[in-house]
Length: 147
Image (cartoon, rainbow, N blue to C red; front, side, top):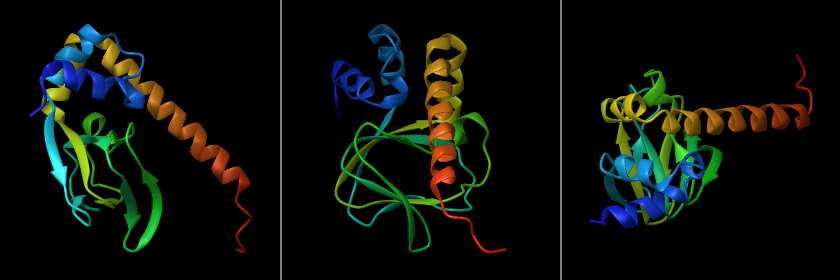
């Protein structure tokens, strides 16, 4: 179990919280659940109703549809963050590639943090906007598919 100050340091390294003041991250640190994952352990299952997001503190995870890898994420990345904003069935599965240490933030706890700390919402919105832009740029580089 990490101390609050250690959790704040980990949160500060996560892209969605990078610009969030430390005193705000201290309140976020109180709502995270620490998970140690083994290689091959799936912690998000495609089709399940999403109720939490995960922050990769150490290790690497694979976002995938079946055996097809969509993206590999390492330390400093968030996954499943849409679930805390708009709970819907998961669009992909996520599995640890190697030993990984992640923080889980449940939707209910996240909602409380958002109500108290708008800086948290701003960070999530910025991260989602970056992701949409990156996906748009990726789509522009893909060759046209025969119809």
